[in-house]
Picture 1 (cartoon, rainbow, N blue to C red):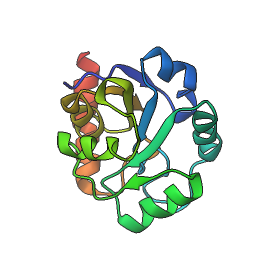
Picture 2: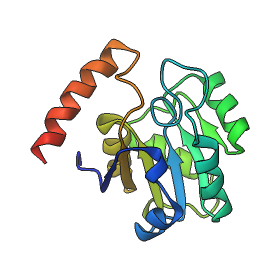
Picture 3: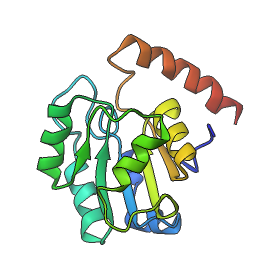
Picture 4: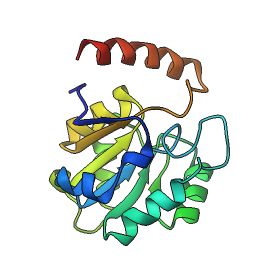
Length: 159
């Protein structure tokens, strides 16, 4: 449950070919420290182009975040994708709720791309999705995130 299907250094490595190779026609993207550094208001360089490439390739894309409503909706509007804020990850129902944003999305044809093992990967695995873990953009803004990252490193080093 804590082993991502794929580990990548950055979101830039998430390509339509990679996702299709994993059997995904849809992708849920985490927001904080995946698309936008948690201590910034502006998307990381190249994010809009990456998401645009996924959309152009015919993949369904949505944002699934535990972050603030305004931040998620603003980013979704810029990228042209729907989003869910204050989602409740890692609970499986949060992922099932996000699937309803994308007509035709099922756990078996959807990937979750995020930076956190205990929210993005664990929750997506519990919901039956393919998981892609990317390196976080920052060490984390909140104390509990920084603590979780230390635990994550221990789990990932054992694998």
